[in-house]
Length: 239
Image (cartoon, rainbow, N blue to C red; front, side, top):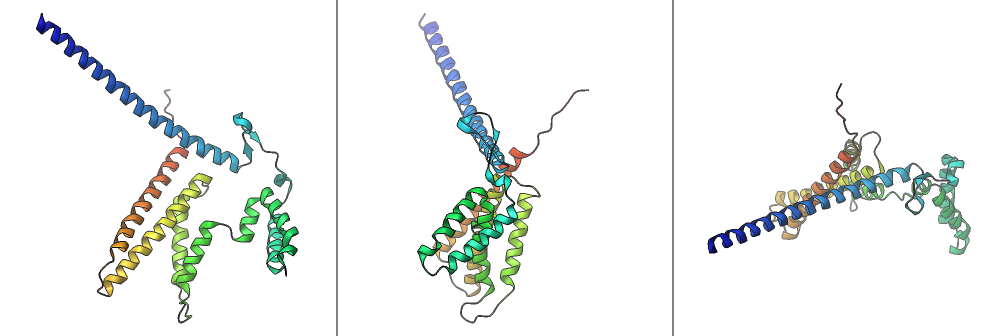
């Protein structure tokens, strides 16, 4: 009797352990599915918002009734450029008030117009700072085509990651990956220059090399995930 009772208890323990393992596996699978659903929703929201749709109070998506649809984007870009010049040329801060107010209105109508007029594209602004620093020597003032070639290489990397018609999410992820590639390249260049001068690589530089490589690989992984989510799925059909 004692042996049978112990066998029953052991069987119940194994059954409970199996049930716990099944629940744990189901919970992990559900968490992964939820994470993918959230990523798909964020990509979908960004794409629909970029082409002029909105979703009031989480109802169905609707075409946004925005004033910029009635305006010519070229006219807004030219007006934004003129306003930026007037703001910089204003003799006093108060004199630039009307121009600043109109520039805010244009920013609501067409953000791209203001970004282009003010050089507000953070990616291009950062790339421009780096390439200008590499093009002109601050001590001698001599110019070198190195900065131009590096800028061309970065744009080549960005184009290869985004493709012809990227979504807003893919564009942002590709820009982050390109900047991470530049940062990793600069850290490797600093280490190579230290080796050329027979100097020991500083531990901080060694850690930066590892950190920038890890961030670059994570950025590439994010680009691959977004591309996989936005890639059309193939459906097999039986004939």
